[in-house]
Image (tube, rainbow, N blue to C red):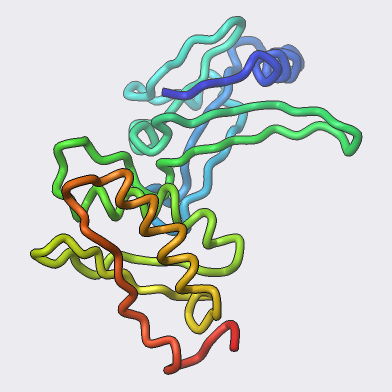
Length: 192
């Protein structure tokens, strides 16, 4: 479920050695399953553990996860990296904004999951996002761009060379293409 690198485990052991006995870490998601989802790690003293929390054992401590966060932390990775600029704890949770859907889920759910977990994080760095509006009977995924993508001159390249290629690889025989339904000349735009 959650992978914690050796360096992160050592970092947690060091921090926990300065806390009251029995303190572990809690890994959680605030606003799970939404575009505003945020992941975090905090101290978890013994009196803050709920009876239905999941306990993940590591050497010298446990990672405690509340039931609401469990599915959103599937495939999460915690690392601790040091470089010339200092040290930093990183938490990557690809399923925080949308819980992983099963392989046998409807095509629209699987496409939406890929958009939320793989495509939108890259678009967000430019202030953009994309959502699925429909899948046509002939297998076209119709997308609606928003934010910085609305009105961007590179949207066609992003659609064809990025999103469509990835979607056709992930859904062979199910999707035949990807189309943009956004009216890029109307409304307020981030780019002109």
